[in-house]
Image (cartoon, rainbow, N blue to C red):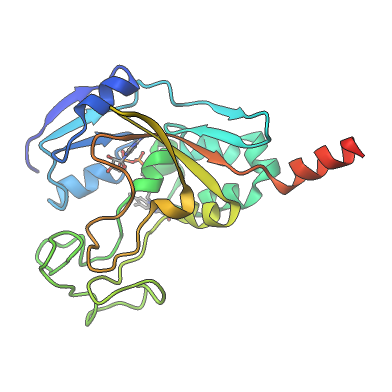
Length: 230
Ligand SMILES: Cc1cc2nc3c(=O)[nH]c(=O)nc-3n(C[C@H](O)[C@H](O)[C@H](O)COP(=O)(O)OP(=O)(O)OC[C@H]3O[C@@H](n4cnc5c(N)ncnc54)[C@H](O)[C@@H]3O)c2cc1C
């Protein structure tokens, strides 16, 4: 494993100030540390964001549910409002990984996890996602778990998150924060198809942090509101 600088962010603004192409945030560390040990990710600096106040789940007035970026996969799966209003999300989270991993894994980390394509994780293989222009050994390799839809000549890796499949069906918005302030991105627009730039995976700048994920209001919320109004 290569050496890197390590620091702890004390505020969201402070974390964003650290952000650049050579710096990576660490939350639960369940993906990042594996990839650093495999030499797939080589950050010069790692910023620990675990002290940031991004661990709450809040019902908004319009019925949406706002989830802090650092809410763990376990806490989210077992949250009473998630279990009641978004059972799909709860079940998707509990279908993934193990209890120990879900206790550490965070909402934003889950969104940002990298592909489990074995050629991406093997630095001896050609992979356009890991090293642009190097080729794609998956195309003629062992690829029955790879993309049927959305792949390209340069990359057929899939996103590995169970949670993200549920989010695509539910509908959600991401809140991103960087030096120029806060912005919102529809979840469906956040991850990119590989095209000829598979190393560009999402719509997050290097100096931005995901601060929250807001789920669309559940259908039941609209129904209850309408029935109360009638
Ligand atoms: C053995 C194993 C089995 C697994 N099985 C499954 C499975 O079946 N289904 C499934 O869906 N997942 C599975 N996972 C993946 C797991 O869900 C992810 O590792 C986890 O969700 C990542 O969260 P984390 O907080 O640990 O992220 P970290 O490892 O801390 O970070 C991952 C990435 O997210 C970035 N990041 C983290 N927080 C932020 C933020 N707030 N803003 C911007 N960037 C951020 C980091 O910089 C890093 O690039 C498995 C993982 C392991 C190790």
